[in-house]
Image 1 (cartoon, rainbow, N blue to C red):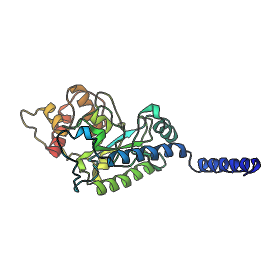
Image 2 (cartoon, rainbow, N blue to C red; image 1 turned 90 degrees about the horizontal axis):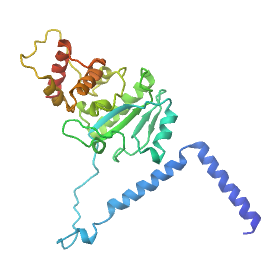
Image 3 (cartoon, rainbow, N blue to C red; image 1 turned 60 degrees about the horizontal axis):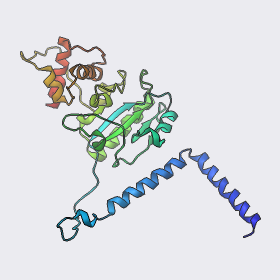
Image 4 (tube, rainbow, N blue to C red; image 1 turned 90 degrees about the vertical axis):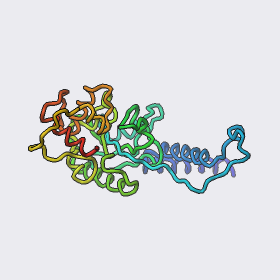
Length: 271
């Protein structure tokens, strides 16, 4: 091949690369994703090193196993100004944050990570006895700056996605919760405009029954009730605030008698 042909070939290859990028602006990061996924598959398939076997004569591969499946869905708001900004954030290695799905305001769903893999979306958090939420959950980010309502198109796509995830992984109804629920001292997402009641009516997350004629037990322990639901109560004020944000769309930090009735009814759903 002479020099002229080589130059033409390089120009043609460059053209194909540009065409690929114009079709998918995330072609480069997708390549990195595939490379890392391939590395993980090699790690999984590798037998233990000899020095890790100790006194075992040889490795015996069981035939009974499968991939770990998610048991929770954690809903976030992005706290950014656009879907594109969030996608960029999740494709920069230096940010060290990610999610399985990002849903834009117009309802577009971006699937960013295989559901069986561990995304870095929950951070330090706890729900019940589970202190490693990243390892047991799917993270869904909703394009929202933290102060706006959630558009109908976005909610429609979220409900479609939740329907699929619940069916695929048999996720319990109670295990659809918010980022703030697992991290009450650090997070407030999704914001108070998120329609938790609507979701619960579709089978995603618990809700409470009418409290009008409820007679409270004489020695009701509100902190114990919060723990039963799943909240980390090391900071009781933060736990109360987060509970009220989720179930009452309220940002005050004290439980009124009416609030305690709601807490009592929610606790019964988890007890």
